[in-house]
Length: 282
Image (cartoon, rainbow, N blue to C red; front, side, top):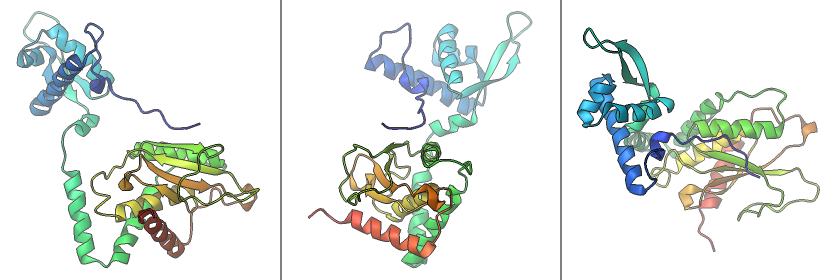
């Protein structure tokens, strides 16, 4: 059974409207209207429903329907109320929220690729990898976890944390699950094994060229789980998802909530695991 935090798809992206038939053309039209509303607000900073209707060439009542959807998705907000003239109802003035910034294009991918290239030009490989492991440790410090948390509670917190970072993570206990290629054989009486999946790569398009990003992800999972993990599949290697195989430590070892230690060993383990994963199948 897979466990994950719910991933809510904004209605801004769904395009379903109760008064229209559900079709690809209608969906595209609806998305275009809401996108244009966001673009107008980005350009004007604020606008009323009437002002938006005038720019869009639509009836104000139709525009208000789309405004309600965008507001429920936390992409716009009412910043103030403005009266137009001496008669009539006051008009709500809409502005973008901070979350709406994610809708607009950015240059983060190009910036990230450029920074990684410069790091690799200026520093030897081992220092580059250590820089990314240090970044992983910094990210992992943001995870909030109760001291008495069980291993499965930790897994739940880890997947939620990773999903917030854009990895769309899920986990499951490996009982009855098909053993992944490259995974170790089970030993009789051993501790339970868990599988952690990440279905999205925040660095898509970069990780194949810059394998240091994959090493950083492995270091991040190690730090979050609190022990070394084995990556048995990778999006960068054209698998459906990144899969991490984790054997729960025995409770009596009192290490389930202990931060992962041993940086030198960790670095060796991460590099060896990634090299093994990257080898072509024989």
